[in-house]
Amino acid sequence: MADPARAKVNRWLSGLARNSQRWITATVLAGALAGAATIAQMVLLAWLVHQGVIDKVPVSDLTPGFIALLGVLVLRAMGQGLQARFAARCSEQVRRDARRQLHQHWNAAGPVALADTSAASLAREWLDHVDALHGYFARFRPQMMLSVVIPLAILALVFSLDWLAGIFLVLSAPLIPVFMALVGMGAEKLNQQHFKIVSRLSGQFLDKVRGLTTLQLFGQTGYASRTLEARSDQYRHITMKTLKVAFLSSAVLEFFASVAIAVLAIYIGFGLLGYIEFGPSDELTLFSGLLILLLAPEFFQPLRTLSQHYHDRAAALGAAAELLARLEQPVGETAASEAFDTAPEDALCLKGVSVRYGNGPALFEDLSLSIGSGQVVALTGPSGGGKSTLLHMLAGFIAPSQGSVMVFGEAPGQQPFGWLGQRGFWSQGTWADNLRLTTPEASDIAIETALRQVGLGELIDSRAEGIHSRIAEDGQGLSGGQARRLSLARIFLADYSLILLDEPTAGLDATSEVFILEALRKLSESGKTLVFSTHHQALLTLADRVLIVNNGEVRYA
Image (cartoon, rainbow, N blue to C red; front, side, top):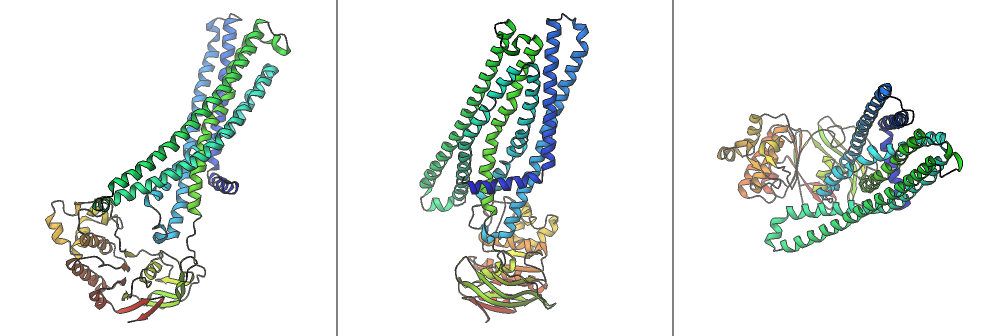
């Protein structure tokens, strides 16, 4: 990751941390409490051994010491429990904030801008990429502070007992952070590659599954399988490289910590035996020597824990780079958006609207249009003339480069509206589940009524499960026309004032077209504002106004 890109990622992560600072502070304080209890535990343990072995104090006289030791153990467990709890709350807050930013970006970008991105990639970002932030905020960030506070406290105690042992600890301590940083640089790059590869693999796998029927028809299932196999092998390779770095770094860090503790043990052992006369070694006692040996692993433990969580940092940086790249994608902000007065009877108003995609020519230039409340307006014209773009603009899916769009006196998308695109959306479940996507509180009777209004009454009667019949994600279980009418039933159920439809009869047989036409007639008679694009002559006769959209011009038929 280049330095400017890394700086951006670090700033974004720091911004997430600011909103959860109280939980990070609470985690550090709980960890410090556990660390202080650990130091007290070692002091009591060394004192009890010294009293029993050297001073020959009876065990009955040491009962208060054992009770104190038990209390310290309970206090240490409480500190560790609170640390885990506060860390989980911090992580939960951070991930909620990250998902809120993603949700706001998706809303601002709209379905048109997101249509070019695989649904699997978006799902991976929402789930796995955000969850990858957990270890960084719950473990690594608090541990950075604890790896300074606890070793310094232990070091101060060791220096008070034996300054030469303290020097041994000071000289060996920097080895762990140095090797941690060296290994971490490689781990960070590998984790970033890991997230990129798994996002691509997820998207390709979902595309292959969705297009399995087409692949079978054209005899391309073998090629698709080989492609997925190659991508999966690439993912396996990068995963094994990441694990190799993780295990190697842990082995190196454990080695240096073990060597440092062994050197300290040799010094204390020979000092107690009287073989070393340099420095304070002749003042060593069983209490001070045992306490230093007990504290030495605890001195290195926060640093070793930090090195283990350093991979959480690498994973978070890799995931954050992908998330930030998504959040920094342009969302087509309106260049000049000014509110303007609209007539009370106008439902939709466009004033001085211009639309262009990227650096290309303007699709619409200085377009002004008003549609009255309760009107039925048909958009027709050659393909590519701008009908879908106009509908997307009225829906708020895309923003104009210049000018303003108002829907019932507000910006597009501020009020609920009905939408039926060229491609329907269905989820795995029952017909009732799919209709409750827009109206969760709808009753079974209301759902059945809506389905009958779109001409699915006979189909309901022919199914044993009725409205609880199953449908797959791609609409399997229904014909194309039936699935389209199921989507239209959502609009009847939700009772929207504005309904936008993009080619509602495209690709349907004559029977389905009749049902769709009749359903739209019912909506128009109920006083709804309908705007739809179509080439179908029967639908044009349904409209109060027919607008021809061609090459950026909108004119009456």
